[in-house]
Amino acid sequence: MNHSMPKVAVACQGGGTHAAFEVGVLTEILKDIHEHKRFELVGLSGTSAGALCTLMVWYGLAPKNGRPGSVRAAIDKLNRFWDAFAATTPAELMLNLFSFSALTAQEKEAPVLGFNAPVFSLNPRGVISQAVSAGLPLFGVRKQYFDFPDMLADACPQFDGIEWQTVQTRLLLGASEIIEGAETVFDSDCNREDNGEAHDGKHTEASVAHRWRKRLPLTLQGVAASGTLPNVREAEKIGEGYYWDGLYSQNPPIREFLAGVRKEHAPDELWIVRINPQQSRQPHSNAEIRDRENELMGNLSLNKELDFILTVNGMIERYGGRLAEDYKPVTVRTIKMTRETATELKTSSKFDRSRGFIDRLRSEGREVARDWLDRWPDVGRYPDDAAYW
Image (cartoon, rainbow, N blue to C red; front, side):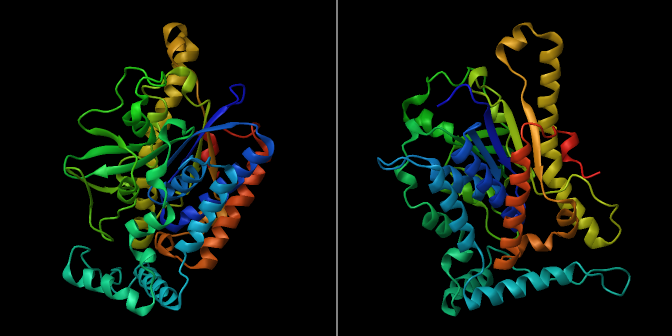
């Protein structure tokens, strides 16, 4: 580990298959690490589909069963996962076309009184929904295509063999516990602590959890919880808790990179890969209102955490003293889609698993990230760099 290089943590928002953009961004970040070694990747954070992206990178980097991880393994794992995530078999292509077309139809205004066309929906806990899921493999749909736990187990077969004591990159995944209403983070550092690393000097005595905020060990169940939309699958039960998508709490988790972490272990820079546009035209139609509502829900909780970092940065600069001894200023930066793409995408397209759509966003992510990395560190800073105009 080179302590002279800037420490960077990369945080990826959730947003369905729009996260394919993050696949391209992360691929270029990993390539830059491999080829130029200009910064040290100390942390990854994600929620929902962003959790899938960061998990795959982290899993590729993590040492497992006596074998080290690598940047090449992380790039390969990330991109292979999304290749498999796309609709592949004829049955999957038809299923994707049907579901995406239904969601697109819902976004079109009906001619009477401005009402939207209804879309048939099944309760994920219902008998009919379970029967449909059980029958999909008979028509050629892979179980990994629609079964979240099976997909994760297939993608991370050596998860139980991870050597937590030698993991170098921290992973945070966001979820929402729905009974107590607790903001929840699944944290790879908890696994280190559970394996005898509680006193490694990385964390202070300051707690990063309380009754309405949970910090739990990283598990594949936790990854599934982070991406559990309540209208798609049943709440994920972990211990005594029931969990939904982290979109409702942290998208993605940021605070834990700094709260209760000793100054020397905190990142110098946070790079936010934003797939929910900060700005938008004024919405008028019902579809535009729902689309903007979804974007705001994915951004506002994140911005509150980022703004608090800026507040602490200002206090360190103004007051110094003991505050500067315990904390350091953290530079926050944004990597985002082009304005044209961000304007074009809708809530319905977050469920489009066609290979062409995923590849198009992945390609744009690589192009945007390559240009951004070529200019770093002479690039913008949050909040201004989150803007399109």
